[in-house]
Length: 616
Image (cartoon, rainbow, N blue to C red; front, side):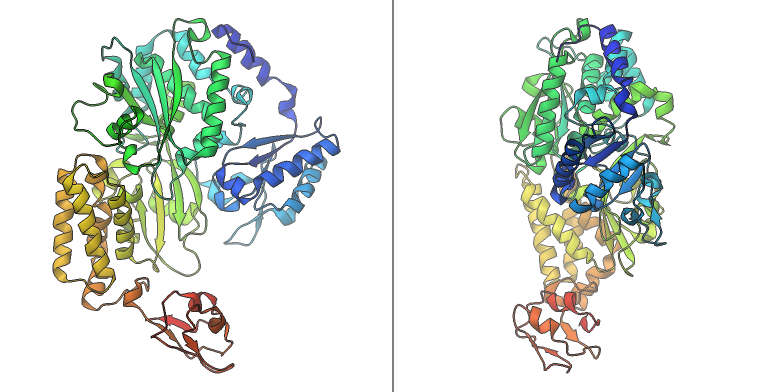
């Protein structure tokens, strides 16, 4: 891999790669992100390679191994180009059939995706409801690129934005384009990216400036950044190179949590390839611009997602937040000016430069431009990564893309913004997904986690779950955060155990307000959101737990009992599956639960085929 010595040489390389004849061959695409590999994608890859080798098919078809495409519950899957045919949940046996079908130009009808509403089979990925309503600006590129092959990235116009910026020789113009695009940071509060860059560019520094990619994605159930790093690491590196040129930064750092082994592997390969080609290092593409990037692995502390705590961790110190001002822009890593953006923000930069800000702003709404990736999980039919225009209504996200609730249960709420976000009730699903709208109703955008909940979800238990996570992840530096989150959790635990009192509700609200107003960092300032939002929109559930000692959703064990009704046929399936031997009864006779032995595990209800087990 030879170094590219000039901008003109880069364009020659790109044009040669883009006209390579192999681009016209039918292509089998197998997504092999973490989710895909966990479901068996590596087996499909081995089978495809074996078939291509044994039958000498390399001149007739090609295989592309990519990162996640988003529809994680349908893994392992195969996508065929250029037809766009999508095969979900492919077995090892059927992979051989798919290879044969691609050679012959045929479609395997029996393997196609089945629409859950109509029962019809859908051939093309773009016509599947999960994909149809999305605008896949970033995730769509995962399908085009093998993450460990830099030339594959270049033949899809990769690093063209970098070359364009370097040829313009006008850093200020780059900042103006980012400002005109309206791009806001995708990792939290949504601060304007261009404004942040402008402030860094104006900072004097004798010892250099830093730009940082924050890949410390700590929200439970969120994996947007991991997926982008796994599937298209060069897009993040290109964004950082452009950011460094615009701001005068001399060193870049990707801070990634150590729990992301595949993302780390692909990032290390991408860094090595970019360095070998001369896209990182001294005098990039023959210019006098020099910039390098290194990777720092984090230990997985949730608080290190906060800027100042992240900086401390990079410096090798304990990841604790510090008082602001001074802000990282003024005094960051080793006292030098520092800009921090998350993975998704950096991945948007090459797109803005390629399209131009005027095209970029056509997606989304005023003040909330572009797309946002969400990890849509919970009690819905379609789960996975979803990329939609900013401003889309929650209802469309949950019921059209997500497919609505599982079975006959009604949707109850969605929780946005990770553990520090709020719970939004179903009656407010008309709400547009943007920074201001979510903040007004007591939630946040965060990095993009979205958990859908149906009527079988206990909102008090949800608040307790997130408060437990937050109290454990508090660094402990602030007394009010350390003890306030702990006490809020203890109160919620008492309520779910049937020991709640009416004064607890007032105490929760007072504690929440104090923790929110007096904590040092974003973790403490947003930690009361799950409690305050559930108290605001689901107060009746708290009252049921306290006044009637009852959990309406049937979740809190100390407030429920299991009962076998007249639907029981005496099949004894529940008896065989009860771990505490609490169910008694003869075959073909109605059974009875011995409440002294019952541990309320729910095994009997989960195996009953006749709806004979009730929760009271």
